[in-house]
Image (cartoon, rainbow, N blue to C red; front, side, top):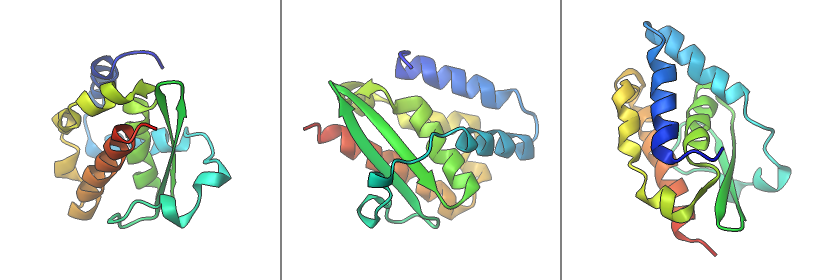
Length: 138
């Protein structure tokens, strides 16, 4: 993945927009989670659980030169799909690119309005966790 955040976002929004019904959009999001690579065991620890999510969501980070690689998993298929969207958008970008990314633009697809409030809040928490990791570049 070498596209900019904005290019990735436009591609994702186009992919989601293909579907007319929200049940189809949910299936698409779930399918994105199923495509995630297995979470490396060193990241599956309580310290990597995102606090405030209804489901268990583990997020691990590693730096390859100046690029942040994001690994994640969840015990919920929809939540795993949601974190997969952030991985698609942000993994492989620099800390500067991640910190300047306008993650609220993801709302353009109407996702937050169609999620339970706890899941919508989880989106905000996931985004915040990733931005904090990027800001703490070693």
